[in-house]
Structures are given as structure tokens and as C-alpha cells.
Length: 156
Image 1 (tube, helix red, strand yellow):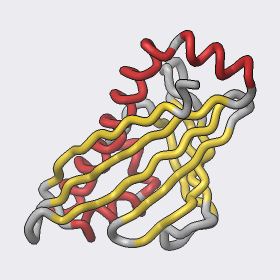
Image 2 (cartoon, rainbow, N blue to C red):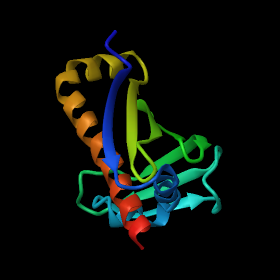
Image 3 (cartoon, one colour):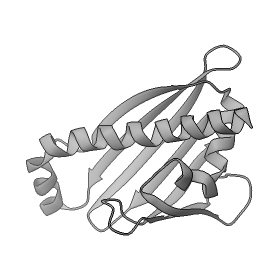
């Protein structure tokens, strides 16, 4: 079958891996760089760690949805793995932060989408040509938003 569907996008940031990690941890500031988010919070509060949840609420009227991300892996400053589970799909996003010199980084975001159940698998298979570009765009936009926040935090 054609699932799971996996895409990888890489964006560059004029920020060190530590500064990029600060952007990942600054969950409450994500809505300042992710326009579709009305709010985001880390539960429980504290340093980003496996076992926590990131609760995001979408801006009313946007195409975005409220999401409850589970932090599966958080190894500062290089790895963050988030998952979302739904009745219809499972999504996993892996962020790898790679140093490029002392003050620059690449954020390599790999998103995997997997259908739940046979009927949903068939439905998503039929829509694969439409889903793939959307998944690529969303993955790039989220990684770019983190890069933008990292650069803003580094400049402050």
C-alpha cells in the first residue's frame, strides 16, 4: 500500500542549534510565527521533554485544526519528535537540527502520515496526489516558522 506517506523538508536558519532549540521550547510564542495558531502551550510546563504534550488551538476560520501533539523524543539541541493520533490517521514529525558552522543551522523536518484502518487507507490512497503537496507545504512552513522564531530570539 502507499502509506505511510513520508516527506522531508530542509530549511536553514541563521541561528545555532541551541538557539533553534530555544525556539522549539518557546511553545507559547509559536503563534507569533505560525499564523494559523491562536495559542500553543506545553503541558506540563517546563523544559521540553519526552512525555509532554503541546496543545495548539487554531485561529477561527482558518484551515488549521486544533492539535494535541505528544512529545516522543526531545534531545536538546538536535532532536524533537512529535506525534498526533486521530481516529483517521497518525502523524509523526521528526525535527533534526544540524549545525552549519557556529551560528547557522539546518532544520530537517520529516513528516510521516499513516492512515488508520482499511477504509481510511483506501480514501487517502485515492487522494495521495493531493495530500503529498499539502504535507510538503505544511512541513516546510512549520520548520520555517521555527527557523524564523530562532532567528528572532537570537537577535533579542
